[in-house]
Length: 147
View 1 (cartoon, rainbow, N blue to C red):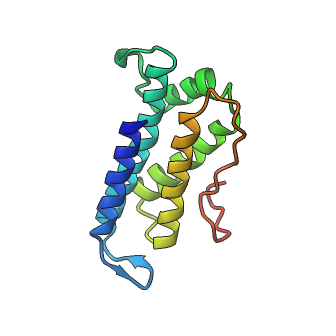
View 2 (cartoon, one colour; view 1 turned 45 degrees about the vertical axis):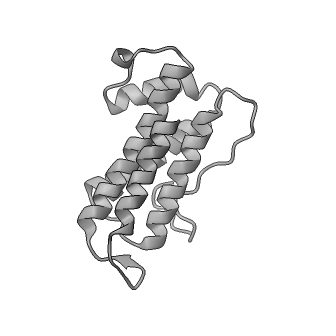
């Protein structure tokens, strides 16, 4: 999952350069870019799992959201059914609300979303083991818009 973590770290680096005022990022454009990169980290984690654990080639990797959903159902959610729901929450938070619509710019909400992304990547990483998993919470302060 080296590449997925690299993407996530790149997203965090983008956030470091954005001015913060009253616990709010003041420039939404780089925040959206960071969310996009964090979402790519999620997809990269799935890709890495499919290549290293399931033997898929780069050509066989999913190319659409529906294909990622199918791959999760077929190869990964078999080990942990909660991962499908968590993927959907992260898709809504990172890709739709964070990147596409630019609705998330509160510092704590951004941190919560990135923490959830990291936890998802870690779960994918150890998906074949018998580890017990905790559900991912996207926002810690009772904001459950994406659950």
